[in-house]
Image (tube, rainbow, N blue to C red):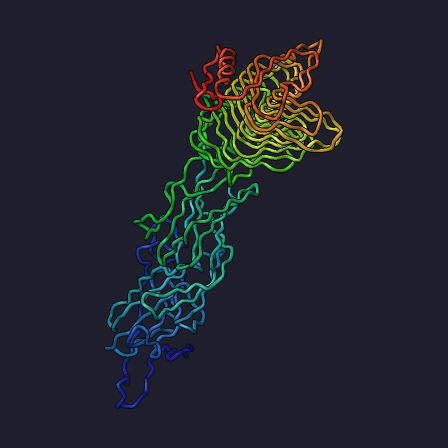
Length: 639
């Protein structure tokens, strides 16, 4: 409502009315109204420390009327600007005078001064984050009668205050520089001074609000409109341009006259609530509200150069460290890891092959997804000579690459190191080389590893490894997933239940497969398909078997154990000893035996399988594992 100024005077003003009207104000010798002002028990935004006083030249608007606290129709003081002088007294302009010397006067004080407020029940307010003093709306309301004492105006904050405290995880070598902290919040509201307490109604819609730096460590604080519905988001921008966005699970509480502290912790690739969570305080005592604790992403021991991983974000940090050149760092999992929301970059690449020890602790890693054109794709891209990856459980992986030279595996795309006691489920697909555990094993070893993943490729394709070469060893490994291939163009295709191509000097010992090995395609390249390996090329197979399922190819060499057994006069190999196959559609154990030695036996039932078990355990004599025949097919167990 629009209210005219009813009293602007520097001298006494007579109020005329009917003598019978109860509102009659008889002529009086009116006195001057003096005020004092302080700020409740809180600090003004313009002050440091705990000051509750105003500063010289501060200006407040004062209104006064007779009667009830919302009866501004009887306004007697309309926006008298009171300025604080250096002597500590307030000077009013225009002068304020009591309407009479007996009636209650109701006072309303507003800071900063309001220039021409007209709607006292819906006064518009705009948050100016660049002018915190002007945005810090303070209101005082009191009732007083004419006395010789000054009217005491004790101001309270009508707006809220947001404090954002930042801390940084120990994954930062030095704390990063913060360029800005912003909130996505409302910047418009209306204020109803006639309600008790003063009522603030935020407008709809949200804008970007800059929260000023306090000058103290990584702390930011600014005025906010209280009572907002939907205020949940805080952004932190670093000097390097990287932006972190924290979105709370529920509306963040902003209360009039109080401040809300949000404690955030930044890792290199995430932001979340610190252990302190979110607090609402009245400048002295705060109480915690809803907010989850933040878990450390990882910890680092510089003495042993070991990073211990607690979350997917922490594992991503470890990948970044390795791919930045620190390839011999040791990595330990201390929790199940969820990579579902992680844009995964494999650990190790062409130039930075992992050479440390990765111990998965038999914790489960879920949600690993790698798609695109990676030449080396998997949990690891490349494991270098001397590197070890062990005790890893990969569940429901989805790994694929359309790179024409792609090497894809659940644990690693390419490995020159050692892989121990790892298991994979899900799917693995490559335009070229694919294996359930590793795409290509070049030297080194794979021991006690298994895969139930489906594997698909066009070049070398195997249930455990697409290709083994350069005297690599596979011992007591198995695959239960189906292996499929598409023979394309002139590319030579090698597909096996355990290994697609077992190359020069490489040895497979006591390994088995139970899935289908099948393929299609009309390409003109050679094609070798086997229950254990597609091609034993100058390598050795000892006590391996393909139990059941289908083994078939479009043409070329196909066998129950090996599609081809090849021996080169220079390198030797081509040795197959005590290997077995069951009912997989093949009548011969070796499809094409080129100058190699091949000892294969077809078996049909559980009783006959005992012969295979005995032979495989003889081959595993020096190992800590053995095969047992508790069901229709042999299984591995620890001795």
